[in-house]
Amino acid sequence: MPPQPGEPYPTASHVVDYLRAYEARYDLPVIRPARVTTVHNGDTRLTVETEQDQRFAARIVISATGTWSRPYLPHYPGQRDFAGRQLHTVGYHGPEEFRGQRVVVVGGGNSAAQILAEASTVADTRWVTTRQPRLLPDDVDGRVLFGVASKYFLARQTGEESSGVAGLGDIVAVPPVREARDRGVLHAEPMFTHLTEHGPAWADGRTETADVIIWCTGFRPALAHLAPLRLRDQDGHLALDGAHARGDNRIYPLGYGDWTGAASATLVGAARTAKTVDAEIARRAAA
Image (cartoon, rainbow, N blue to C red):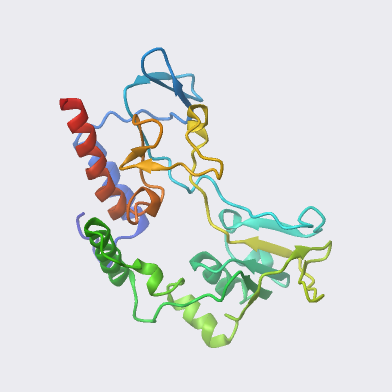
């Protein structure tokens, strides 16, 4: 990727520009818009159908739909009774709309810590997590994380033990998070057990009044299009044999997180996993 003038690391727009230029340079046959709704068995091949009434026949399907289109909201008793507003991370667009309100932030990851850091400057905030969150050391930045992820990838290739980024902590101490820590607002309370009309409640009888609950509870793999193939087990997990789906070696899930390859939900991890998938498909084609 070419360097970006004036930036030590590429910004999001620079990455998008690079990918767009990559597509143009190699004249990749990308069809858009084409939102896939279902993949099912045809007469002799897989059939891929889209919302635009397109239909494709395929010997092999690489499913790389990611997780970001499927936000996850856990279920807690009383959620429907709560009279305030509830939103997921994807619905958060800045702190100003919460000015003067009582806000409960749920979750122990980067999104929760960064939203809490912002919202706490204009609102009365509470932070609740299922376990005590761990901040990474202040000197850990993107370059360090890249190196740790690379070591984790190599360790998995050789069968060695490695905890990856998770061994360092849960939350990158970016400047807003460090500032919030210094203000004393990064105090996490145990997770509530249920919701009432007015806010969260705990098993010991303690309650809080809240206007807003922000669920920073992550995402799940977007795999609804594969449902007709019945590949998931009773726990909803899609198991792999090597790089392809167990039960159908024509389906290759790619880019959904560590279960499809080390750090495969990142650009570098997806690229590494793609090389493995590509090589296996090439061997099968040659055979």
